[in-house]
Image (cartoon, rainbow, N blue to C red; front, side, top):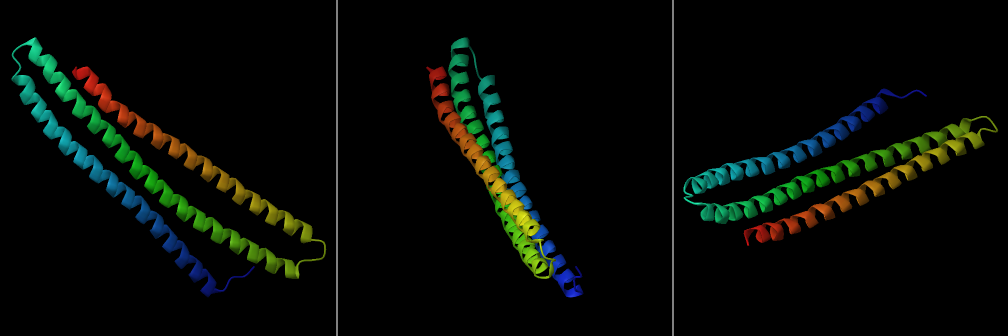
Length: 179
């Protein structure tokens, strides 16, 4: 099948736009992740300095027991918040990638079906079965991708639930150690 230069140029332009969208999603996710990491690093540095000052002022074992509990609880809560933030960024970025991939697959499937329909118009008699089989295989592939996407979403939802549950458990555990 011959493609006119205009069709080739349009295809290249569409592919460049798609690549740019993918790059923007990746860079946006990386930028949000960097911001979370920078904020966590600054907080950890400040907390570490405060903890070092507090530990340096300890005079006996009773004070040490009291201080260790006051230091542990905020650290556990901040760690849980950090993990949740990183997970949220990863999940959002993955969802954006999935949306772009779905758009691309839908467009590709549409182009293939249109091309097959054009081919069917000029195809020799008896080739309808092969064309229909190819269309069926294309539909099966799309269904398999949708099922895979649903399974990945369920896995992500389960992971998010587990992270949130762990975050909620971190605070009471730290409070219990304080008593």
